[in-house]
Image (cartoon, rainbow, N blue to C red; front, side, top):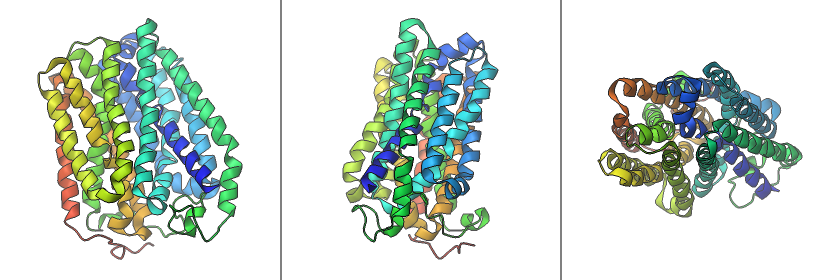
Length: 410
């Protein structure tokens, strides 16, 4: 029963990834059809990210009241409705309208599931779960590429992914009795991955019984500001690459929209493959080495993209994705060890807010800057974010681990 619940969580991560790369893959054609400048993509992602921040901050309260299963199901339904709404949009303001439920659906379940896995499962499951997010995110660009190569019909891609989300929502809805049975059962043993009987309380999802740690108190814990800046930089790196990669290959390197969408998908493919492979050795290598190596390889990939290598530059984009692969799951998984289990739920929630702030601010900022300077700036922008993340995590690594007594929950 517990392994089946873990499989449901894997399915939920696929559903989280499905919509994430659609806007970036289709925007080279979408902005022309909608009659808006290319930089307006940042406006859509801004609205989505704000909704995600709001719902992620409310996720602990929602999960405690309604249970992780119902929150996850409703979130997937919201994203499905939003994607089907995107497929009907004929004007830019319609995209902005449907971006609201899109963002709200994406955020509510994220912090709770991530903290649950960080507390009760090994690093390999954290990597594999985020690899399954990448599976979802990798499907979308190819669906968009097929739609664009057929007749430029980008709404068909949104409709297809929306219907896939409807199917996933149906599976999650059918699984609700399983979540309830697992929550009701509290045996003293686990599946072999959980650390304690707390892990069986799936609807608690994140140790919600622990006390509240205020934002001010959390920021006073040594290392928290550093990890927040590192997570900000990483998520800005990831989202900027996904959003602007295809447009960069069209406008700066001269590829057609269909080819560029496929090249843009290489970042997500690298992300997905890298997380899957990291799952096999993450427990041996450790979170710190995975984070350090990830930022370094991401910087190398961005440097290769910056070089005038023609079509070979897509290799750099793939390397950047492979490098980025272990950073997100390793930062989340290391939170209980870095700051103490009692503080992990609060700090992971704040990390999510920092992550979504990065995805909210930095991709639109690049859109504004590139509108004046040019899209050639993309690899240098990504390189700066990778180096910022590396510096901040190295600063964190110099501090002692397990600072669980620094901040008392209150």
